[in-house]
Image 1 (cartoon, rainbow, N blue to C red):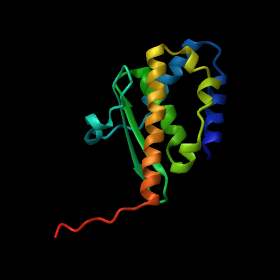
Image 2: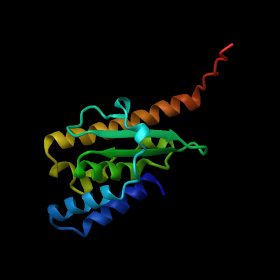
Image 3: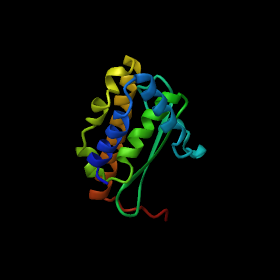
Image 4: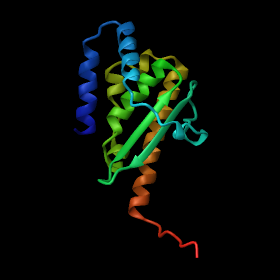
Length: 150
């Protein structure tokens, strides 16, 4: 699925809820279904700066040239939010991630219903995922030879 198709799918899922408390409950459920985060990746360099809660994010380039994101948070709503972003961006090429907008966040009303600190954290998560995409795209375009230890 494309990023746009995934975003539309998420917007459709959220459209069944009329109350924000129900949307928050759904976010919490989404967070609970997030793939368990590997403890070896729970390091300082994987913490997203700008989030009030602790959010870890890791990205790997798969053999088919797509990114696979894993994430976790110590806050239940934030964990649900990052699970949405992982769902949207995992399995996509770096170029598609770089070019993507995240309009679904406005479509589902997420940005307007978050506290200012959570909204800033959301933007930091999106920014970090796009930075990973830029880094992997640059690495793919300009692979550096591995120096022999000899």
